[in-house]
Length: 165
Image 1 (tube, rainbow, N blue to C red):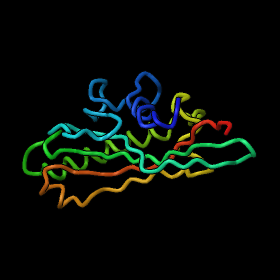
Image 2 (image 1 turned 90 degrees about the vertical axis):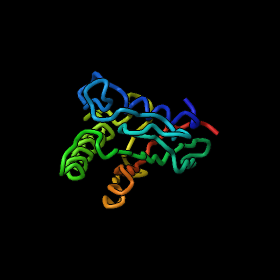
Image 3 (image 1 turned 180 degrees about the vertical axis):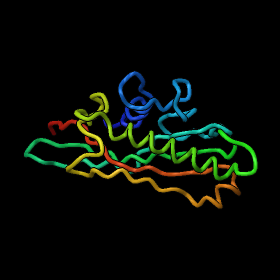
Image 4 (image 1 turned 60 degrees about the horizontal axis):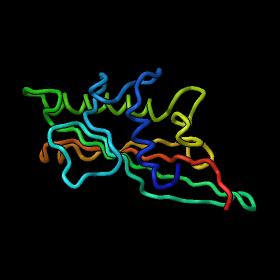
């Protein structure tokens, strides 16, 4: 476990099934077709997608020889118009489907009641001291209709276990 594999660890957590949290992948009954670390050169078309990116990495010294890495994750969400609905109200239905999918995603990010480590992949995720906020920002839906997909960004932090330096 290093700072280099943080996006892969988080993508693995979001793809996890079999616990009491919602499954996110469509293969296991969830709403998302793709969950992966990093944005590919050519993203898939007409599939619901989550890309786990890291926008910042901060290491802070908190004791004489101890440091802790904090990852600032950004999830890029892509929801194609027509992914789950059709008909005259397709835009409204797809926005509703995206809202429902985001609610499941946030529930999984929040983690289990007594375990905020995402299955021991991190020390803690979306918890104090560095930030307990999970922020979801939706792109302009008018642009989404014009572009053929709705998009949103989810940001939050995760702390790794401390290390000696």
